[in-house]
Length: 82
Image (cartoon, rainbow, N blue to C red; front, side, top):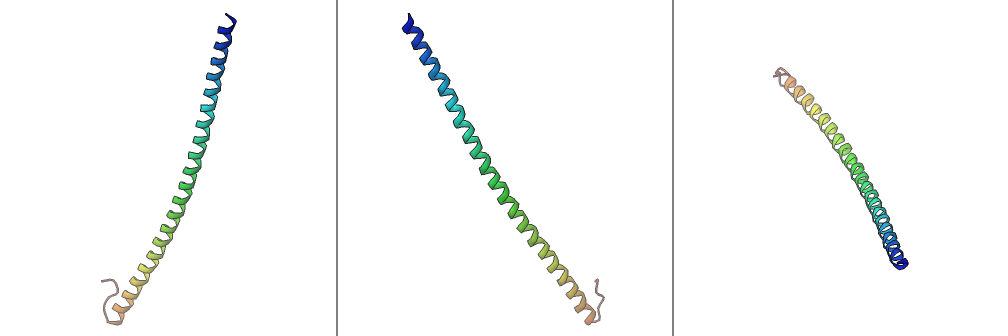
């Protein structure tokens, strides 16, 4: 009878240790996934900053083209806002 209780105790201990081991692996996996997500978010932020800078540069270039076009129209004797 004592050996049955011993076997049950060993099996119960194995189940508990296995559960805690599985839980530790899951926590580590989640931590890795969070780090990967943070890297992706930072990379996306960098891409967004680069695109915003490109759009601002493009806006400046379009303003210059508009000003130059108006100056050419004035030089040709036309209204600059036609």
